Image 1 (spheres, rainbow, N blue to C red):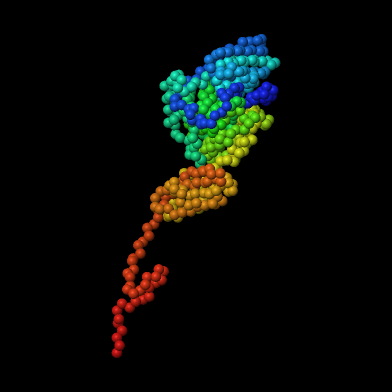
Image 2 (tube, one colour):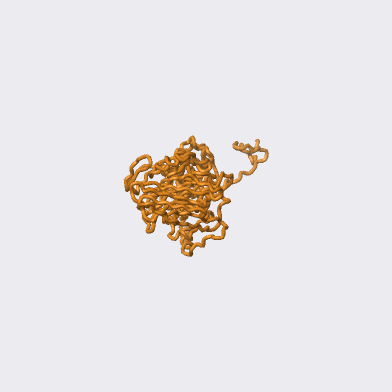
Length: 522
C-alpha cells in the first residue's frame, strides 16, 4: 500500500494495520524484563491535546509544534468520519531527550464505522507511538480532492502510574464495570486460561467507558484475528502498559469509539493485556476487523512486523489466547470456520466479500484475510501457521460412557465398570498421551493414538474428564460428564473352619475328613 513505498524511500518502515499504532521514534534499545513492572493497580488519566491544521489552500494543510508538553502517541483526525483524504497524511516527531527529528512517516486513515455508526465519531488516521516526544509536524495533501473540514493533530499523553493525576472513575462507570463483572461467566474452555494483565493493572481510565460492553449477538466466537499495532522502532516491555493506555485514549477520545478496539494485546515479552472491557472469558464484541467483528475476537501484537517477525514469546502469547478462546466454543486452532460478511469489500489478496454472504476462514486468521490491509505485517503473517499448529489437542471431548453416547455436561450410570470413549481433531502423532480423570485425579493413562480408557468406580457421583498432553507438552482437558456409580454389595462368604492336620493350599479344596469313626470290626 502507499505508505510502505514512501517509508521505504526514507529508510523507515510504516505499518498499515487498522486500527493500530506506528512508531516513529522509540524510547531506546530494549532491556530485558517483564511488562508486569509497568503495570499499576488503578486508573491512570490520559490526555489529548488538539492542534488545528492551518489550510494552505483547499488541498493542503500543515501544523508544527515544538517544545510542547511531552506526549507518547499522535495522530490526525477530522470532523466527518465518512470523509476521505485521497492524498497523503505525513507526520514526524522530535525526541524529547535528544531533540532529533524522525523521518516523515505516512499515516493510513482508519476505516469509518469500524466500531459501528456512532454520533460524534471522527475520521482519523492510525496513531503513531513516539515514546517520549516534545515536538511534532504534520503535512496533509488532499491529492485531487479538497481536504475534509476540521483537520487536527491529536497528541496523546498516556499518563504515568504514580504521577499524581490518577483518573477518578465516574460512579456510573464503576456501576457499569461492576455489572459487567457480575455477568455470568463465559463457557468453560478445554485449554487453560492464560495469565492476562487486567484493565485495572495497566491503568485503564474506566471513566472513558460510559456505555458498557457489547457481546456477540450469537454468543459464539468462531475465529480469532491477529493484528499488529505497527510500532516500527524498539520499545521496552516496561512501556507496554503505556502503549496500551495510549491506544485506549486515542480510540475513545479521538476516534469516538466506545472503548479500545482490540480484545487482547500482547507484547514482545509474551505478556497478554485485556483490551476491550466485558470479561476475558466472555464473547466481547471488539472493533478490529471491519465486516467480521460480530463472530470473532482479536489479539494485537505490539510492534511493527512488516520487516521482522514477532518474537517467540509473542507468538506463544497469541497461541495461548487462541487456544483458550477457541477452546471455549469447540473450535480447532488449526481448523476452518464459516463467517458471515458484515460489509461488501475486498481483502488484501483481492478476495471480494458481499454483505450477508458466508465465507470460509481459518480459525486463526490475519487481519488482511478479512480487510484490505498489510496487517499483521508481511513477516508475522506467515508465522500464523506456526501458531495454528502450536496448540494443545483440540476439540477434545468424551463421546460415550460404557458404549452409550453422551454429550459434555451429560450424566451416565454404571454398576462400577467405566469405559470412556473420547476423540480429538488433533492428529494422533501430535498427542503424547491421554489420562482418564475421576474427580480431578488421574486413574488411567493410555497412548496418544488411543480412543478409550477404562477404570472401576466406587459408589457415588463422579466428575469424569479426559486430559490430553500434546507432544509439545501443552495440555487440554475435555469438558466433564457426570457418572453416577451404584456398585452392588457383594454377599459375605462364610468363613470355613480350619481342619487340624490339613494344610491350607490356596485354590485347592481340602480332602474329606472323617470326624467320627463309625466302623466296627466283628
